[in-house]
Image 1: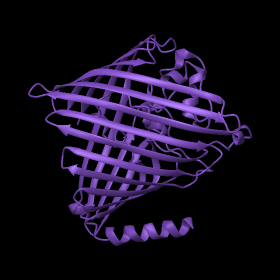
Image 2: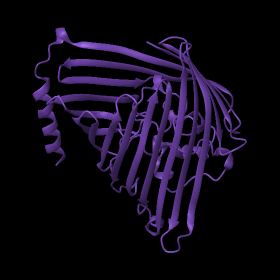
Image 3: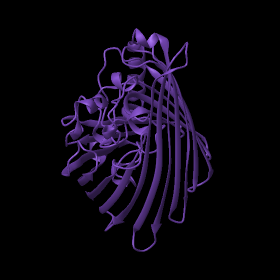
Length: 372
C-alpha cells in the first residue's frame, strides 16, 4: 500500500514539475537569529544567556505550479534543563508524557510541552525543521508533501520571527507538531478553506522523529473567513492510531483570530480523549488531555510598540476505568505579559514575564532578534 501511495505522489510531482527551467528559477534565502536572556525562579534553571535560535530558510519557485520550502535550525534541539534535572528529561520522549509527570512542584514550569524552552524540546533526528514541496492543481487545490507543521496550530504555522510571545503555548508539542506526511488544501469559496492531512504522528516541535512503529494518522480542518482580513474561524478533528508509544486517541480543535486596527485576539482550544492501552497497566486506564489559551495584543501606531497578554491552561486526567479514580490529575496555568518593540522590519526586542502555576515559578525572558 505504501509503495502505491509513493508511486502516485511521484507521478503527481512529475505531472507538475516537468517544465523546470533552471535559468528562470526564482529563489530566496532568508534567516532569523535570536539571542535570549532568562532569569527564572524555578530552582533547577539558572540565569543564562542563550543563542536561542538560528533559522535558515530557502524558498524556490520551480515553476508556476511547483514551490519548494525548507527551514533548518542551526542551534541545539535539546532543552538546556534536560541536563540539569533528570525528572524533566521525559519531555523529549512522548512515551512518558502521556501517563506520567514529575511530582516535584518546582518543575511545573517546564514539564508540559509548550512550557519552558518548549521550542527546543523533543529533539529531532536532524536539524531540518520543515521541508516540503507544494504542487498546485486547478488553481484551487494544493498538495503539500514533506516535513510540515500540522495545520491545526496557529502558532506552529507562524514564522518564528513573527511570534508575539517568546514561549509557545502548551498546545504546541502535545497537539501542534512538525510531522512527515502530506496535506491537501482546497479553496472552493473565498470564505472557506478545507484541508486534509495525513502524517506519521511522530513529530516534535523542532522536527520529526523516526519511529519504527509510527502509524498513519489523519486530520480534517475547515477555515471559515466571514470577514476578510479581520476574522478567521477554524474547526479541526484528528484520529490517532495506537502504537507502542502513543495510545489511540480522538482530537477536537477549535479557534479563531480577530484582527482590527492593530488589535489582535486569538483563541485556541484542544481536547484529546485517549485510551492508553499500550502498557499492561494502561489497559485499565482512560484519559483526557485538554488545553486552551486566550491571547491578546495591541500595536501602537507609528512607534511599533506592541503590548501582549495571554492566559494558557493545560490539564491532563488519567483515570482507572472501573473506579473512575484518578491515577493522575495534573494542570498547568501560565499567565504571560510582555512587550515587543520593532526597531525596524528586521530587528526586534521582546520582553516577556511568565507566571506559572502562581508564585515561585515566574520567569523573565528578554529576546533580541535579527532577520535577513
